[in-house]
Length: 102
Image 1 (cartoon, helix red, strand yellow):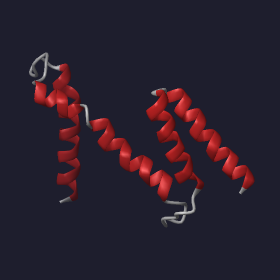
Image 2 (cartoon, one colour):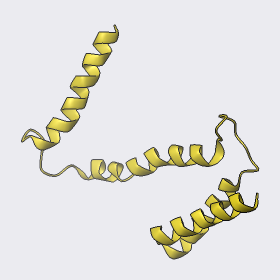
Image 3 (spheres, helix red, strand yellow):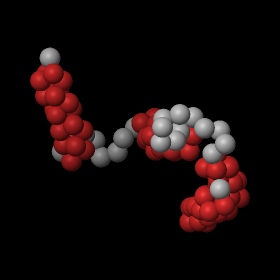
């Protein structure tokens, strides 16, 4: 059973890498697929970011975490400035200030 899963995973991984490079797939994808691909990065990154903000090293949710406050401020800066660099600098600065004083 485990070998079947390993082989199937390998074939699936190979196909996802090979098909876009081959002449089997069309040059352009349909509009509904292109529209759906726009949400992939949000769907993948959101659980990673939420997990890193809310859960500590002991795998418990902590609400008095300075990361929550820094994330809220970073979201506000991101909405106002639309700048990734400024958002990262403000968020990291808030975290560093809280870690220094706490």
